[in-house]
Amino acid sequence: MTQDRNRRFWNRIAQRYAARPLKDVPAYEAMLAATAACLSPSARVLELGCGTGGTAIRLAPQVAHWTATDFSAEMVRIASAKPRGTNLTFKVVDAANAFDDGPYDVVCAFNVLHLVDDLPGLLARAHANLRPGGVLISKTWCFAGVNPLLRALFRVLQVVRLFPDAAILSEAQLQQAIRGAGFDIVDQKVFGPHPQNPYIVARRSDGTADRR
Image (cartoon, rainbow, N blue to C red; front, side, top):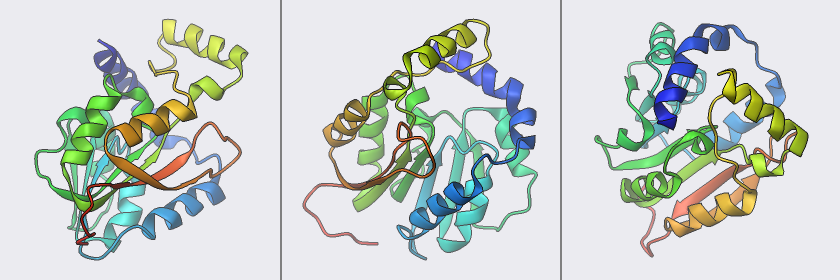
């Protein structure tokens, strides 16, 4: 199963991932600022695929509670060892089963939607577990837009378990999946040099007012 292979991959590389410096600090800081603008002090936030917790630790002080989840026990172990506020909880759980404590005001999915087995199902669950007017914030690799030679290299690296299994999404397919789950895309931008990695803010579209 793809998720099981990917879980083993991320557990294996967790220590190296945690030690790796950010490649583009200004782009990351800009993404944090854009996300912070979508938050409120009363918000309950769920993060899918939190990795080693850096984003959660930076943004959690701005909300009522932040639940950061990842299916990699090693990633969560590293995240949990870092200093953090009392309103931040780390959990080991796969994305499809992370919604038990909902509803939430915001769901964040940074560089994870291309890694899930069932994207439409996950987006439907996110929609169902957001409060009216709630927001989905995502940053997703759309590998269909990457150079074909690079895609071929990724396939080779997957065979030798040096790259995770990932969907080959186009930007249009990603947008269609988000809208198909019942969201309105209200903002989209790119942070850094890779247009194939769009940042999207989508609001639950159900005709009700935002109660955040």
